[in-house]
Amino acid sequence: MSECLSCLSNSGVKRISPADTIYEGNYWLVEHVYPTGLLGWVVIVLKRHSEKLHELTREEWMELGELNYRLVNALHKLLDSQKEYSCCFAEMEGFRHIHFHVIPKTKDFDDGNTGAKVFKYLRVTGAECVSKEKIIELCNKLNNEMG
Image 1 (spheres, rainbow, N blue to C red):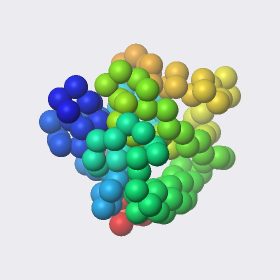
Image 2 (image 1 turned 90 degrees about the vertical axis):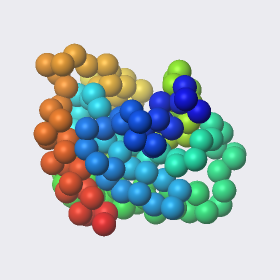
Image 3 (image 1 turned 135 degrees about the vertical axis):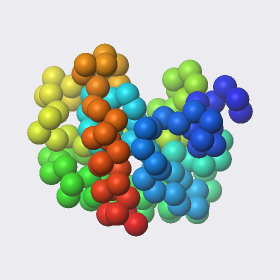
């Protein structure tokens, strides 16, 4: 699906992250989003193209549950998050492919961005963006934690 940005990222044609994939399971990939104003904003992306949660197999759901568990705990350990958000909308043009956002609420989190306002962190300018180097460093640590 050439218009699907998630499929393009999964195939390596146009990656959503400056870092290597954090984790690759049988059915899901874990990636750090870029650009973002919040270090630790990751997505769990279905490897195959699907746009509907009801199309997921039992095996895909089971792996997703385990990945969420491991990822949230790794983010908490590495970033000392107060809490974490997890959500799936898959409605934005180019991103209808099933993916789950996992967003740590850290000390760097602006309390004005709680709930759905958190998506402001994906609409940042160059100066507000977390550096590629910091993202790569965190992704390497997350990879080791989830390994």
